[in-house]
Amino acid sequence: MEAVVAARIVHVLGVVLWIGGVWFVTTVIIPSVIEDGCGEESIKLFERVEDRFAWQSRIIVLITGLSGFYMLYVANSWSLFLNSSYWWLFAMSLVWLAFTLLLFVLEPLFLHRWFMSAIKRAPQSTFRRMNWLHWVMLVLSLVTIAGTVAGSHGWLWL
Ligand code: HEM
Image (cartoon, rainbow, N blue to C red; front, side, top):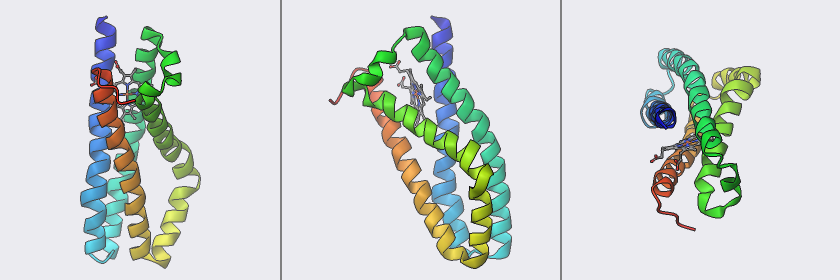
């Protein structure tokens, strides 16, 4: 019992650090770079910030996923994935999968290289497009968090 509560604590702390970081990058860091006219110095600083955050995110995403799967395993609630009232369980896994793919596969394989050459060609539009993508991920994550907290405390909307 205590182990599941501990897993939930770790899981929620992971979500706070991870999605809080996405919020900060989306609403503070990228808009500041755009406001600065995507100057050379601010792009350099952005890369350092993103690089640090990407490493932290990789570790946090792993821990959040493991603690989530552990809770499902202990409660043996896999069948809830088939129940539409538990759409938020599906949403959590989807958000997790999307970030895992981005951080562990797409970014190291080609996204980073593509981004570096795109900034050289058209910095403003590249940062705007990236901000838009961050907003999509942020809104999906926030809807998921709201649905999960409501659902896991008995407020099932469907
Ligand atoms: C592999 C991915 C994930 C799995 C398997 C998973 C699984 C779970 C499980 C089983 C619970 C406990 C639910 C309950 O007791 O009713 C939970 C809680 C929670 N999860 Fe996830 N999760 C995952 C990823 C995420 C992500 C990406 C987010 C945020 C975007 C998230 C946000 C939360 C929150 C906020 C809670 C606490 C709800 C509460 O107790 O009020 N999870 N998760």
